[in-house]
Amino acid sequence: MEQLVADYPDTCYAMMGIHPCDVIKDWESQFEEIKTYFKKGHHIAIGEIGIDLYWDKSLQKEQTESFRAHINWAKEEKLPIVIHCRDAFDEIFEVLDQENDDNLFGVFHCFTGTEEQANRILNYGGFKLGIGGVVTFKNSGVDKAIQNIDLKHIVLETDAPYLAPTPFRGKRNESAYIPQIAKKLSDIYSVDEKEIGRITTQNALEVFKINA
Image 1 (cartoon, rainbow, N blue to C red):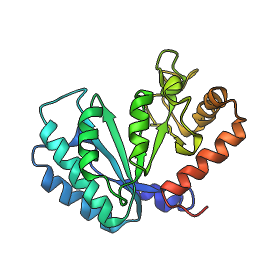
Image 2 (cartoon, rainbow, N blue to C red; image 1 turned 90 degrees about the vertical axis):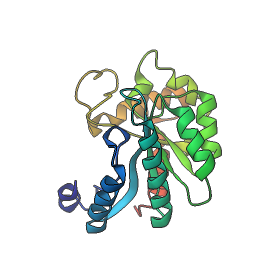
Image 3 (tube, rainbow, N blue to C red; image 1 turned 60 degrees about the horizontal axis):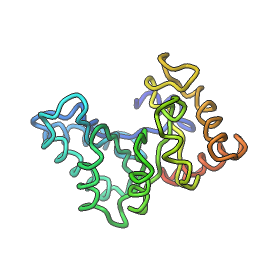
Image 4 (spheres, rainbow, N blue to C red; image 1 turned 90 degrees about the horizontal axis):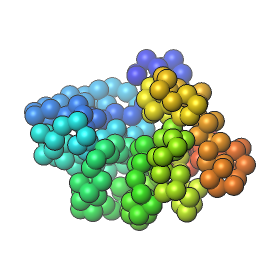
């Protein structure tokens, strides 16, 4: 990751954090190690962090503790967080309800929830919804969940190498497929694809504090 940033300093930016699926029993030592890497480079966000109860619930307590620690770290660094949520909306909302303040902001990555959940996220005041390939899936429901959400709250994502948009579903995902997501949002919002690109790019620059 650090090498990519070094090779492409004007187009590639890094974030640092422990993905919930990588949280271990002794997460505190893991967390301290991550911080040492953080100090060596330039990072624009803390993430992906969050709670994932899809594969394994045995470390839910540790995932929650790690999530909270990362949130407080991000506040100290005045950086956005990028939240990973899978089968854990209620658990994540419980933490955010307790930790939310003016210093908490970021992206709710790979949003796949309902309109009600989308509005609850946005009501925290500092979050964007990350919309990726899932919105193009026929029965995902994401298109309906976001159709009444203002575009100012949306950023486009890849989640590479996973969740490639239709018609590339099942293949290795990459950033070259972002226009497919913009095209879908163009249909949802009845807004020109270029305008979708302009607005969502500006949203991303804003939340990650990147000077274009």
